[in-house]
Length: 263
Image (cartoon, rainbow, N blue to C red; front, side, top):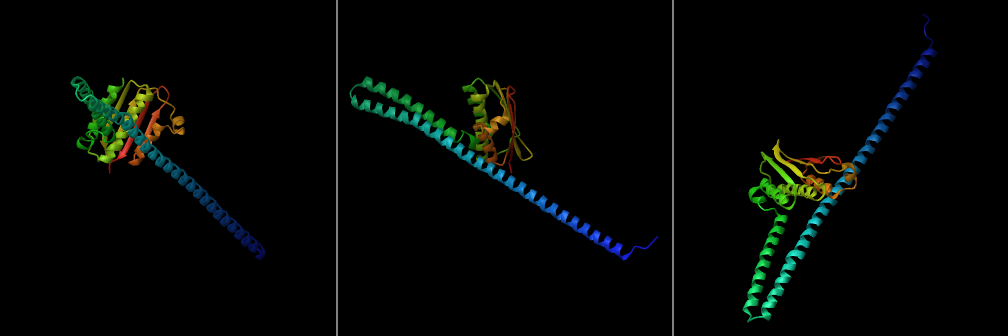
């Protein structure tokens, strides 16, 4: 075999060098493009995460503001009106200081009004901090909530509490509000006849399982519209680092699993 000429060796060496340079340029270009793509994806993810955090923040503020408005309305419409009426009754006593029959009638009306006002104040106080939550725990308060809901509606509620550990008051209150939101939605919107509710502790996690046989809804459409009920449930769960999983379709009821870390 004939030996390669120096020219052929130079051409081969030069061609190989060019090929290596092109390969290196290609690799570097790929790395740069890939890194830019990763950076864009990371920025998009951070923007989405920031947007979600803003939505949760505004959802929390909205929930707080809704509670304040409801409390102010209850105080004004019920307690305020009762005190105004009581003031009028006291004025009538002053106008009839010597009429025993009139005074007795006004006194009886005043007692009834005072008793009703005391009941309203207890109800408002219970809405702010559910009765027995601090003393007897979450299970006791949720049981009372279910009983009250059944008294005010035609829904049968089946509650099961399984191995529920002690939970601090702050977290218990948020969980209570979450369940209250679910039951309110069931009464107002779902047209359900029955609700199954399970509270249990597993592996340092509080699990809440909710199921009703109501009319259900299109979850994607409701979520895109930022349904207030869904937003409140998600917001309350996120406040204590929990996760939610909705399962629902029109005419198929609603299933919801909530997982909340207890550590």
